[in-house]
Image (tube, rainbow, N blue to C red; front, side, top):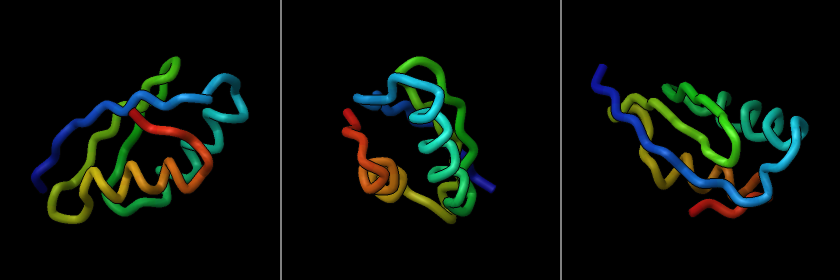
Length: 67
C-alpha cells in the first residue's frame, strides 16, 4: 500500500455534529483514515484506491466548503 497525507481546511465545521458528519462520510471511503481537529481534516489515504478529488468531493457533498 502506498499512502499519502493531505490536509483540507473545511469551512462550516464548527460543532461536534459537523465533525461526526464529516467523520462518518469520509470513513465510508475505501482506503481513507481521517483525523479531524478544529477546521482541519487530515486524511491518510491509499493512493492505489483513492484520490484527493474524491475525498474533497465527498466532504463537499456533505454540505461543507473545502479549501
